[in-house]
Image 1 (cartoon, helix red, strand yellow):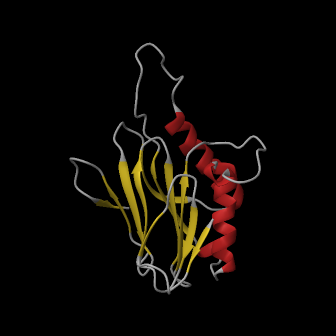
Image 2 (cartoon, helix red, strand yellow):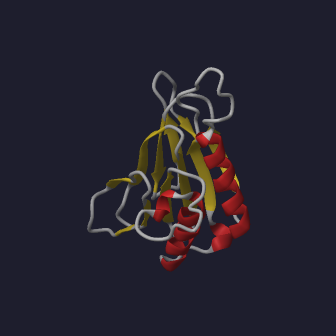
Length: 168
């Protein structure tokens, strides 16, 4: 889990299984190359506190410890809690997600390798349990995405090779 302050760099990349929270002084948080992973961007527009989680798998099955924030059931509550510690209020937090693609469809295997879909479902369920809804998304398909959150404005953008950037 990373907490970023004004004295650190302006653009922070949120790596696989990381949860990063930022406020004043940080310009952008970014999850690069999301495939089946889900990038979750959360923002409180009043406190101007934002955070991102780069979620790799849906459920930890009770595997606590180092690296457990790669799971939706661990990362989502951790992100919200860290944002609250920096002044965010749950009722003001807006969440947008991107990713959850099926990157390597295999013929004849149907739904066996649907990690992206499972990740999206798990993130939505954990958010609902926290009392937070998803306000926008760019999910599914079979293309990778890069997801960015501007801490100053709360704008979330998604870019994908061969596609126009979109703002969620």
